Length: 546
Image (cartoon, rainbow, N blue to C red; front, side, top):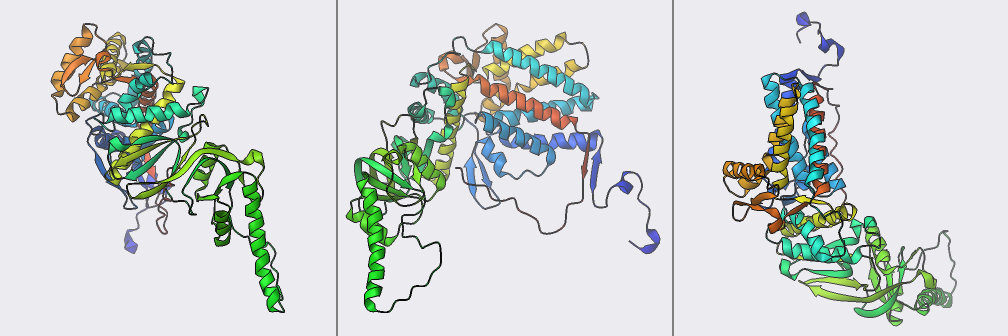
């Protein structure tokens, strides 16, 4: 600035450092926040439901995602706006908690915020809207309890039919038209690894191996693990064998202390290398004598060690990932040992068969363990491109997570937007009983439920208005289970179509959405400090799935 014109900053400017941003008031802060959240929910909304569109997201590492799984989409979009981040966090919370329904959370939150915006423009104060929304969500949760299908609270988690009926909706929303194939794969895998007490079901026990080539119909479930690597030695197949697992490498180790060896004559040089050989042979022999036929190494396998393993007819596998090694131990019931030596009989694991097979040009090692009870099952997915495989994997993940959720709480509610229309109708009736200004907020909350049938029918290319009005008509005459049949574009009873959603998924999705929306509405000022200088720090790249 020119020296003559240095005007003293006044007001809030004088308090904060220069370079900060400060937005306050309704139109600047609240409506801008709402707008950002609406943008986010517009992105996810079109991929809601079975006919949802796919999004192509290229993240900052140039990785391409083609998916309609909302959790993946919002994770890969680096959302900058603080208010929209709140919705992303709500979606993530849903993904962590249930593993499905992230899309419902984000779309619904965006919808009720849009309702809030209309109310604010009408002149309601945000705090009145928040209190209305809070009443509405509590009422919604009461009504959800009444809509639970009778007799669904007891279920046998090992009965494939019952599992599939609950899992179908979650998988269909990711891979429409292939849900029957995927569900039966996932259900098989989950039932195999389900422990005695189903509440302890561990999602990590169902692995996914993605192999290019073939089609979905070539996919199978393997009891045990599939390692995407070849064996190290020449022995490719072994049945009913004991396994020794070494967490370190199978190799001659350099001594801990540094020392110099003076060698005077050629004989000493020969003896020196002979002793090394003898030592390795002794170690490998000890392993072979303990009855183990398969050696699994967590690190490198030395040339010499390999030679002796071959001589003693030991099969050698190399698993470099620590997590995979742990899973392998879980599959076989082995204990990983730190250094080479004779293993205790208790530390050995057991496998039914280890074999190397070639699937679609890729050599994989299949470790089967049929008797081992609830160890690990692997779903082998086949597909034509990487992005298809990734999407199939997400569908399987959703299925497995749904299985976990149903082990804890198996109650179901009608799917296909039947629940949402019923909620809309009931909450609307509840709003007429309220007297204060909350009633407008509650009515808006009720209308927001219409977004779900509307989006479902729009994504399927049907006439949304007609469908919603005929749904309302059906529900008004007392058929609480009528939803949309997307294929025929008509309203049908969901119990005949067999579309059920888990109660917990709906419960948490609506709860998180309402919480996130209220959080955004409570903000009335945004004060951003001047961004720190220095090089921009990229967020560290995400770890791999394990």
